[in-house]
Length: 415
Ligand code: AMP
Ligand code: GLY
Image (cartoon, rainbow, N blue to C red):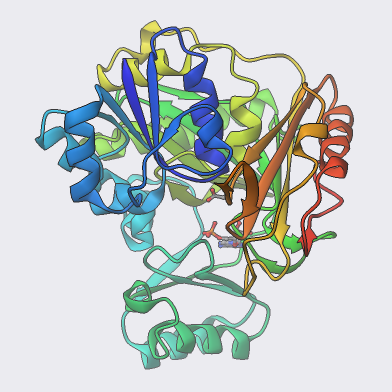
């Protein structure tokens, strides 16, 4: 098989590495890819959101496309590929609304009784403001559309919540994503991420995981796309897993089928383990990043076989198995991320990293055999261990090998 992976971050590096080990994959492309991905796949210079050129390239060159990031899924890349007869992994545009529209997702949960925070939807600022005053703080304000994981404000005061609504609806900080906002109840409890493969009939959760969204050690600073992750989560007990399957995972798949928009691909359940049981914080329509870097390093089954089975709706015939122990991924980011940061700095020390540790590249590019920084999140240093402590310690052994100007990372991932 000739396979194309769409995307170019740490998640796509992890997916490409797993696919490069598949007995079914003879040729692997990644578009646009990055400096590290170029070691396992041929990188093609097409932007992940350039549907037209991606479809043209795929038609000519590959048998199978895996669409990893949220934007192309929300834009309907899978629909466009299929319309041209190309096999593609990922949800259709309509199903990807579980992520691309928070109002859609909340509507589904509301209609089908899937546990989540109580909410209301607003398209008028003054009405939203009045509602915030009526409900009081703490309260959560969310832009409806995609906002790079930054369109959520957990406000501890009424003023902060009103400010957030103002920024989204009137200042248009996230463009049209803020035309509609959601205001919801503030839940409490630890957060766990469950990624699950689904073909629309069967749903198979992967190992549970936790990510660290805040920029700085001690859960301080602004929210990011994720500064590290580990799996499995010690908080996610077999009892909680059973409850999530019956109250959340299965009902979500059934709900999408009842709506006539079956979901095929990977669903990301962002869960909060509240005192009243697990509840959904958000859905994503894709693998999470950096969670995937930790999770796929534990996968024993051929990833291509799973993708193939999802498309043909025979996931129930695949036995998906995982390594014992734990995995931990520590992100090394560019100074200034998630706000302004510089790129183009040389990354050194990658060749010093021991073989049992994987340096997934998130934002790098290759220039004359030199790896340069090329994004906010630069590397995801990932290691396994028989305990979480050991996996984290080993990941930090890898982190210690790497240097680039203004690099920063959290020192408490997995701790
Ligand atoms: P989201 O982008 O929806 O995952 O939200 C980002 C982060 O905001 C989550 O990981 C939570 O930490 C927090 N959050 C979102 N919604 C709520 C809520 N209803 N109650 C408490 N925290 C929330
Ligand atoms: N790590 C959060 C996400 O992928 O959305």
